[in-house]
Image (cartoon, rainbow, N blue to C red; front, side):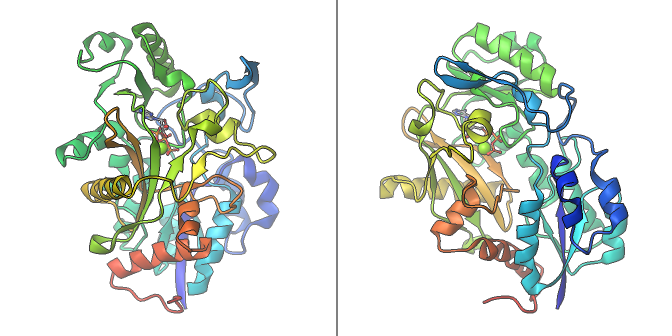
Length: 396
Ligand SMILES: Nc1ncnc2c1ncn2[C@@H]1O[C@H](COP(=O)(O)OP(=O)(O)OP(=O)(O)O)[C@@H](O)[C@H]1O
Ligand SMILES: [Mg+2]
């Protein structure tokens, strides 16, 4: 039997509710000290608020609008116990699962436990290199781990550096600029055509991405850039808005065996009337509710075979250009000429286990005939193969 580590960060608000359900491999001390004092996973300070406090929403023009996006998204990237437990269950076919929460004592615990391999789903403790920390520590102690390496994880968490690399390799991506202050707006290239879309450069899970990021005028742009700079304390990416259909591609495997699972298409018609057609904070966390799910995904996406081939090829090109390993999700959108452009690449994809939750990677896996367990096992098997390891008890 193998000893499989699972590295994760858990959302604080779920801790108190589930402390009594902690797995046996987590001691009480670890569980107590691990979460309450965590720093937020973002680069800098976001407006202060109590954890778990929901920001009020208002009815406006017939639809619900978010008043302050930053208020609710502090821990949006981190996982719930439900997800961590589902992953641990899937890994248990290989042997003992060792919980390694990515807190400050992670290095000591990794060194003491020395698992045969770590399944990495840790979003990290903070800063723009947060996703690289667990893989870097695994490398430091010569412990194999799943997924991309520290360089790729940090690269993909910087949306502008990602776009630079994609451009170098000829992967289409929207024209862009980056500003670190409002004053720099005066120097953004004239070639950028409105409407523009702005976002914090180092975030994910739609942190800082609401309808207001769509800017039709220089006044909109100045106002929203100022808001993002103040709220997220990091540079702001300004991109031309891609007006066409949006897709996300779950990619699995390595080298010539890397493949795209059935493509997920975004059905923007499911958004409230008048909403800006983006899959942002409102669509993910406000308009999609358990009692009224948003039918935003279409999988396998309805598209012509030619477009499907182009989207798949572009996704694989991006995956390889950025050095992704084992799995990653590539977000793309068509430009005004119908060419698929890469928006961003997620080498630590969201993996909510409940099919009722809109989670693209598990959805694509289901469409490919894979159960949630098989998806997680395929990722770990892919990693083990890279290290020349054979996992005992591995399902064929
Ligand atoms: N340049 C663009 N043109 C049009 N829409 C865009 C553009 N950039 C982002 N969007 C919209 O905003 C959404 C969120 O953007 P992006 O994927 O960069 O954010 P994220 O928070 O990292 O997402 P994720 O939840 O996938 O981590 C996209 O799915 C897309 O709908
Ligand atoms: Mg995205």
